[in-house]
Image (cartoon, rainbow, N blue to C red):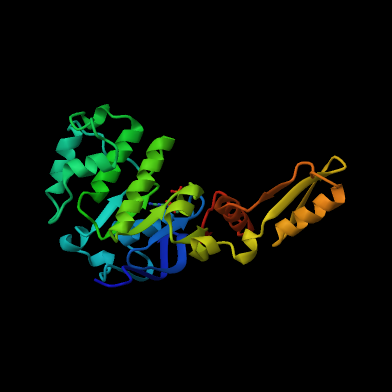
Length: 290
Ligand SMILES: Nc1ncnc2c1ncn2[C@@H]1O[C@H](COP(=O)(O)OP(=O)(O)OP(=O)(O)O)[C@@H](O)[C@H]1O
């Protein structure tokens, strides 16, 4: 086992004349949770599917658990946990049957009952998957992703369709997997989810990596500078400053008391991400013509 389970160098993928992934490079270190962020169509799923061995690349080098995914065998695949973007589970079997069946594919599976509890499907063991709600089926997807005790777990928009309680429960589960040393590659459009779970992130726009680094450093140092808002003569004023308390104190002294509408906020990861994507011309990102 390598201490850098995922290594990607100058990865490119074209669909006909359309370049969906345009020369991206990144590493994911052992035990780390790495978030791949980007607008719809940026190339995240294409990248993940190449790493999972589902799609061939057009150019570049990729190593996943020391193996080129284009040549990964069953033993390699058994070390991966995969939660695809779309729900695949709609069968006529029960939750217990489905998980029991999949557990049989792996050399050291987790206990089915444990997994059912971990994804919050306790009480639904004997329910047919076709009778579950959309969010509950998504939990089955997550359960199938972790049943084989993967070394590397791919989570492609795992909490889409989850209610807020289920999302929190899922975050607890991911933290538990992290504590066990699982390396995780996550894509999500929920920036609070990325901020909570990820150690590092890469932001893809139009098939190119526009930023990468520890989650708190995304957007660069200046992106985090706090905003001070207040009202003066009925007009909302906004100033960015690294010393918000000093500005607030000055305003207090000038106003001779409480400052109307005073608010100090730090840009959230979502604010920073939206700036970053906007600056790189991405909204509904469309890659580039080759
Ligand atoms: N099989 C395919 N054939 C042709 N074009 C494709 C194919 N799969 C994806 N694309 C295109 O490649 C680009 C990247 O798609 P991809 O699914 O990787 O984006 P994404 O970042 O995962 O988006 P989302 O957030 O919507 O899931 C898109 O413009 C998409 O239309």
